Amino acid sequence: MSSRDGFESLIARAHALFDRLEQILPPAPVEPDWKAIAFRWRRSNGRGRLEAVAHPHKLRLTDLRDIDVQKARIKANTQQFVDGKPANNVLLTGARGTGKSSLVKALLNEYAKKGLRLIEVDRDDLTDLPDITDLIASRPERFIIYCDDLSFESGEPGYKALKSILDGSVSAVLDNVLIYATSNRRHLMPEYFSENREAKHVDGEVHPGEAIEEKVSLSERFGLWLSFYPFDQDAYLNIVNHWLKRFGLSAADIEAARSAALLWSLERGARSGRVAWQFARDWAGQHAARSK
Image 1 (cartoon, rainbow, N blue to C red):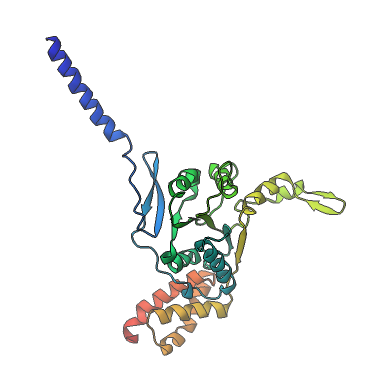
Image 2 (image 1 turned 90 degrees about the vertical axis):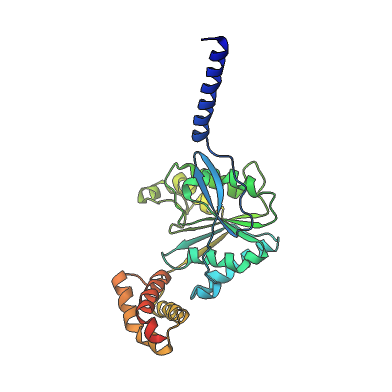
């Protein structure tokens, strides 16, 4: 074989190798669709990207019942944020199904026309927070980074990443970014009875041990705490009635649903906004045709 043939063979092999590498290497980053109002942070092939949400949830603040105090406080904080005024990161904690995540989604619909945007980030991707904030730092919109059902076990890397973003770390805290997180745990981490043994009594005062101090140190970085509590029977029925009305049922059909709604909550072992919504969908599906 001549030297020319050998060279051409080498070139062909190099091209084949490059083709194989292109299949393995992650694709070039794609510019996010900044026309969208909601995004998810997604990772693939070792690289993260902002993925636009094609159909954001259409919840309205008026759909959320019997959490008026929490609604007013977070609405005021969000209004300050979109107006370019100082505002706080928010931690929403408490009972399941009481409207924590729904409230954040409803805020997006309330303020999207004023430039509010939402980025949902999974707990496992919180280590990418510096990349996310770098991506949106120069944007004119106002971004809420939203972490739903947030909790940590000891030593998880996302824990320290979130602490750094909340406090700014070496970088300054961005004016166009806030963190809104929901959790069933007030301090975002499991608390054990044995940790109370570390507490010390000094001059009649109780000083928590280091383990508890470390767990509190993350939640206290949120400037605004909102607590949510289980609904009583009247509040639960009020939510049921609201959704049945939204589904187009008549006043008579709504009144007829009362006993079934109470039985539904007993069978589920909970009275919450989520349970009320689920009952209303079931009942409306069975009775909407007759109501029309």
